Image (tube, rainbow, N blue to C red):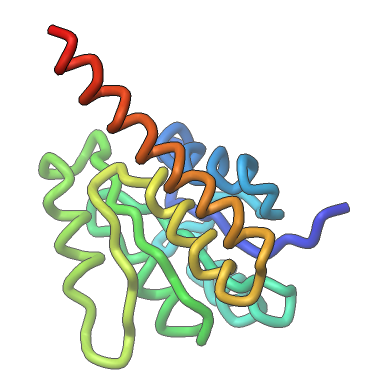
Length: 164
């Protein structure tokens, strides 16, 4: 069984469709991960246990998605020393995602949370892979391949435009 290195957590199962994008990236790069609901408001003690035990359980990065008041990423970051990536979720009760974005990005000093775009779980997964690649040459090669594929896509787009 693959070692779980990334925690992909969300405040509610209603966030799962967005957060699944992060899990898909992690699968693509063959990075072990867990996928859980950890609610800052409904299960605060479980959230504290999750954050304080993360490093001992072998996690190297946590991706935390939350909508509305979006306390989950910041609360997790306040209790662990491993990198936390926040994904603001445009949820049913949000203000077009702005409340979530501002809640995550406006962290106080000494509680950093790397923040991606609203519903940007894809990039959160990729950022987690980049963080892990610092000490993993296989991931570095896979990331280089992705960059090369993206460059090829742009070249093909330009060839198509020139042909028109």
